[in-house]
Length: 176
Image 1 (cartoon, helix red, strand yellow):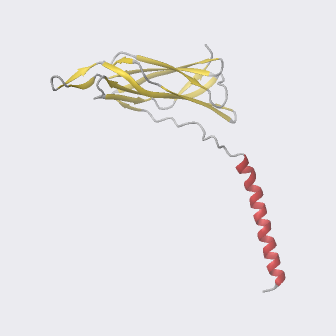
Image 2 (cartoon, one colour):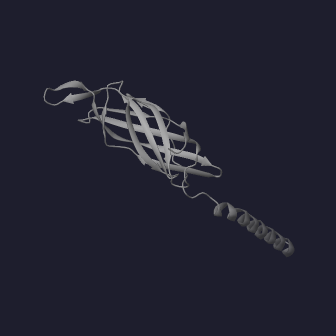
Image 3 (cartoon, helix red, strand yellow):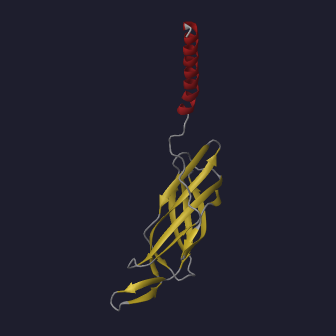
């Protein structure tokens, strides 16, 4: 093979490599490495229903999320009698709320875990839980946002449970 042809091929390969590296550098320098906003689960219900979610903003940093829900009576095992009985006494055992807001090129979001209060699960009583969601990437702004909530409830003996997710709900963020 002609030495000139080899030199030109080598120069061409080096030029293509430099060009590829030059194009890849800005993409990697500006890549989002934060992991982004957490996903909001689709709506789902197992003996509980999220009936509403409301949000109020305090000082642009805290979004107070109130989740309203109902739940069905629990079928619990009575160890003294060996029978299954129905009870309306429950505990809020877990759940959470996620707020996501587009702010131009920035996506502000925050998340909170919910737990620890007694609830009445009779199918009609509307229970409420409120928790503060701190903005993790940018302060909250007045305007539209998306909220998702989950609730997990259990009877006193943990033999039956109810669960619900809201799916994405569009809300307006505004101060008190």
